[in-house]
Length: 94
Image (cartoon, rainbow, N blue to C red; front, top):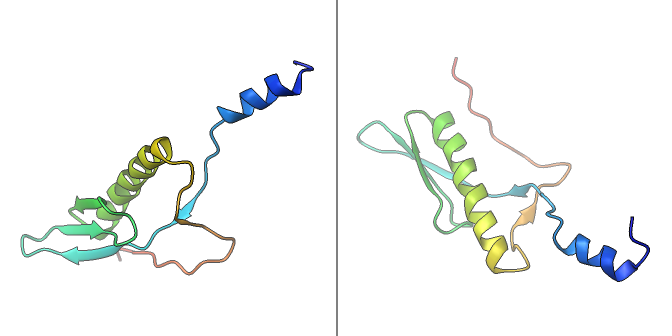
């Protein structure tokens, strides 16, 4: 372990910190019978699935990639961090 704090600080700069973000998603059923997920909060997020659940799963992956790309370009991410208490809607096939 280095005793020089500047060397240690240099290591911290490259340490990636993962966060969870709360992003609103809109789901729409297309006439073709597929579901499309988009987000006004995250431009570029478009995901399509055969079911709502599949569209949401794909949207989560697309959102992660968009946020990672934005994180590489900018130092701050302007999205709300997911808090300990949030209202979420889940989709259950029954």
